[in-house]
Length: 69
Image (cartoon, rainbow, N blue to C red; front, side):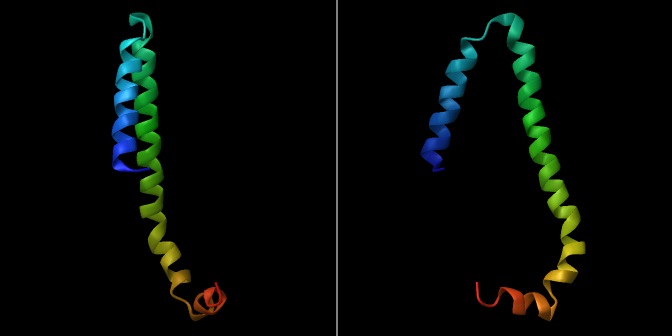
């Protein structure tokens, strides 16, 4: 997604948020926070698993297995 598309989507989201009834605002906030936390957890899992996976990535067998791709 290009930077322009991202900005257009964010602007569209802002417009849609303005239409949400007051009694639903907290639900939307909760959902957005859930999405942010989910993204952060995925990033953290990648960082935590990297040292363990690095051992396998650096093996000569791995180089051989990926050589023809």
